[in-house]
Image (cartoon, rainbow, N blue to C red; front, side, top):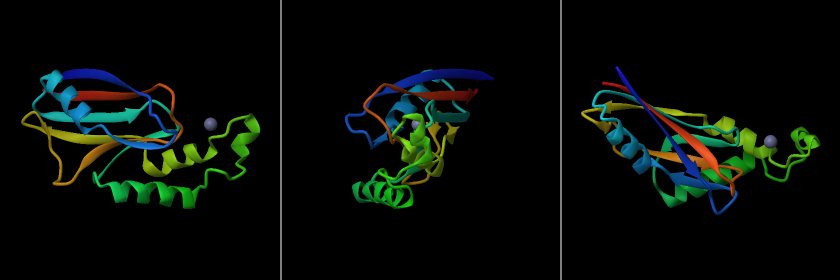
Length: 137
Ligand code: ZN
C-alpha cells in the first residue's frame, strides 16, 4: 500500500467563499501514482468545510443564503465573549461537514456525473491549509 500527502494553502479574497478544488485534488491523485484506493480531503481549520456538490453559481449562492438563515453572521454568539467574531463560521463548518472521501478507480476520481469538490471558506482572508491524503496502490 502507498500513501501520498499534500497540503494546499488557500487564502480567499472574501471572508466567505466557496472554492472548487476538484482540479487540485485530481492533481494530487496523479502525483501519487495511486490507481486504486481512496483520497481524503479536509480543511485543517474549524471555520472551513470540504464538501461535494454541483458547480452551479445559483446553488453556491443558495448554500450561503441557507447557512445565513440557519446561523446568521451578526447574531450575538456566546463564542464572541472570548473576543472572537466568527461564531457563525464554526456552526456553518459543522453543518457543511469536515471532510470528503472519494474512491480512486483507474487513477481517476470515481465521481457521479455532477460531483465536484468544494472548499467552503467561512472566515477567510488569511492562509488556511487543506490536507489531501491519498491511500491505495
Ligand atoms: Zn472562533
